[in-house]
Amino acid sequence: MRKKINAIMLAVLVVGTVAPRADTAPQTINEVVTWMADRLAALEAVEQTATMSIQLVFEDREEKTEEERLLVFQRPNHFRVASDMHILVADETYLSIAFPELGYFMKLPLTDELTVVIEEQAEMVAAMVLPDVAALWARDPAVALQALIATLESEGLTFAVKGWVEYEDRPALHLRITDKREHGMLADGLDAWIDAETGLIAGLSAEIDFSAMQADFGATAPGWPARYHLEYRTQFVTVNTPVTESRFTLDTDGWEQVADFDELADRMQAATERSAGREWVGTPAPDFELTLLDGEVFRLADQRGRVVLIDFWATWCPPCVESLPYLQALYADLPEDQVVFLGISLDRSTQRDRVQAMWEQFDIRYKVGINAGGDIATAYEVFSIPTLLIVDAEGIIRYQKVGFSPEQMAEVRTTLTQLLDAADGSPKLNE
Image (tube, rainbow, N blue to C red):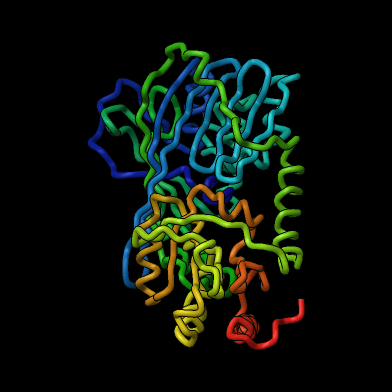
């Protein structure tokens, strides 16, 4: 879905006042493509920062998250694109792609033109950038933009050129994109502001209707918002000014190198299979510390003598959210002095309010903390969520399960009951 939204996001913001310009605005989307391509091809260097904000609208509340983005570009083959999820850096010798939250990176030798190397990885790289950036480093920006427009039009989107405006104190071309599909996600259309000097997207704004998307799939996702408003604003730092070489270096200290996207996928799949298997059962649970939402520091080693249920989850994971009421109901039936439930959220630290709001929404009474750095999940080799573990009173993992179903809760209840009985002096479980 990320790739589709990135592709659709030729989008935008509030319309500013009309900006006086000597030249005539392009009148059709084909003219816009030619106009953008000319400016992108002529752009020698640019450095810009951007803020991507998302306002999530639930039935009973609203939440907002923000992400900072960076683009540094200098011809012929230097660039840096950075966000919370990934970093792309090209210098004279390598195209490096890093995934900070996963702790992996790859270095692809630039034995050919940069555009050739990127085209070889196009399917993955295109999902990491907005379409203007993909066109910026394309062999032919016009061809890249025309292919995008053709794809969107074939999916039922239409384009209207609204003319020049003043956007963020810079002249820009305003586009409006309308979604006419039966279950289209763009509830109120998209607006896009294209910077007049650079040809890059200056701002985006769109209303995404999740209910329409869910209807298209024939199901609803518990805990998902009904809608969200996306807003993207750029701030140009420099245009056509030489960029220092240090902007194109990547510090990979502490990350693990993989050869390519296939190896990355294999590593993640192998870790998922390991976490879904039985190899953790019967082994000591790795110790950890986690600061909870209420400020308490939770230490697994301090829980000896009590049974501990650990749930790795996130607010953006529908099955994780679906499982919360079941876990709370189970927790309420068990003796608090003998059992501990801990929710380990893999949300970002900036999403604390969202985690807290969801805890209150479901009236969850057990402990929860955010493992934003992911070190606990890494220690437990958790790459798929929800992942649920049960640790006995002696610190040994006795149960592990990836995924969620209501039927699974009966299995969890049985395991907890047996472990509590064993801790009270009943015969130990067979290992």
